Length: 199
Image 1 (cartoon, rainbow, N blue to C red):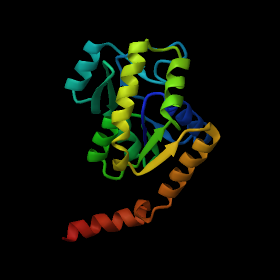
Image 2 (image 1 turned 180 degrees about the vertical axis):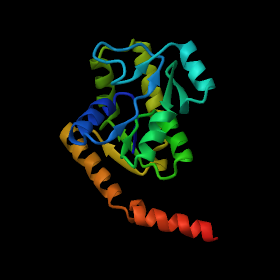
Image 3 (image 1 turned 90 degrees about the vertical axis):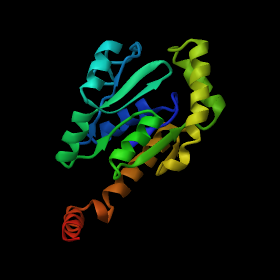
């Protein structure tokens, strides 16, 4: 499952709460070159690195996808994704919107969830309240958010994060529904693979 959406929509908090309720779920910690915020823990919220180190990792094929966002680089580690899939575990990722679409192009079974604030005014309030960006950075993030919302039709689900408990309930409902898909059952996957072999 991929949870994406504009900066300030509440992805970090929502995913953190989901992981508390779903401790067996794998989580792909993204790598970024941006500065760590006061409340963030390296290796938990992101893996923070330098631009040079990031470029070396990218050149070495260590990412499923990489993107530049608001002047910083972000990447989804390939090893984490491949290990979780090989183990048959549920996996949650948190790339930005273009990154989410890139992952979907590689892993067609990925489920895309678009998380958004209830209004532009609320999004602005959240960005200002966290005191992590300059006014110029906030303007840039709001501009990017407007562009990202145009990609909504390419996602499978949309959650409006007006209140955390309701958003969390919606996300768990999506997870439950996807776990019940017949196409995700081992027998169905094996039958599909056998059919492809016979063709």
